[in-house]
Length: 158
Length: 290
Image (cartoon, rainbow over all chains, first blue to last red; front, side):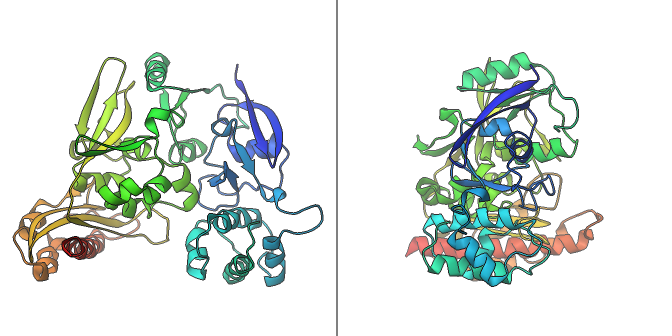
């Protein structure tokens, strides 16, 4: 009885896992669904590297229990590229040098996708506000802000 | 955590009745969970180890916002993001929207809930101090009773609230106060971090004079603090004198030193936040007159 069955639609594909009820979403995604693109960082909701979208809204995988996302649509950065072709947002990250070590990148991308889809006007200030709580220790953030603003200017939503 | 042997049980309640039954039957170490934005980090850090979690976040009755008998009634599982975007909140309790915008990051606001915030009782949290100013009541339910408890008597100390095992906060209600202006300001070292000091204010004007004022702060004590002396000085004062009525507040506060900041410095921050909140509230009340 200590393992709970949890189902999610992960990047469009149904995934079923069995894990203890106190398993966090980030652990579940990595260990049950092998979604290794999602990184586990601080485990207290402050670094943002485990950010995924749950039913379209950004959530921190380490402060959400997997059982709480049961039946939900979960999106990770693995949903963005079409095969080997980068999504428009990923391409901007590449062009501006918005990714260095890469540990924060998947969380940055998914927080940015939420903003791009919101229909709000994407200004540099808006990007900084929306992405605060996604920490990067390499880039100094400017390249990330540039990437998101440029992607929005071209109408990108992923 | 997944790498230690655990037997924590979890149930997702479909109704308030089911949640209350599960909470009553679960015994000690049973905790309700909604957004989990405070509880799950505490579990990860080993500061909480509930034996049984009752998930109330998807109960439809806790997800509504409506006006009822001259009050705005907000279901406990309404998220902070919803507070910042809901048109009824914007119209009837804009202070809650202002305050909720300061909570954590967007991800935390997407999942964290108003009921969770008030039940958790963090002394630095944005919504309880706002509920003091709004003179809100919390609906507390258990299997054998249901009652409204005033926000101002609900906080009992750091992470201590007037909730017994088996009880659940199911709604927050706020009296409608048209023609008021509101303000909320906080200071934290990093954006999204817990505030060292915050202030919430509400003001109504009669011409150029303040006809009623409510001000409460965090950072000064182990719970939100209503500033009754400041409110008395503000009431009847002209708008131009409002800032002076708050100035000097720091001297009246007795704030303990802690490892992060000296008490006297924190008191000055609290005063500064209160000045800004009152200034915004007066400007808001002026706009309501126009």
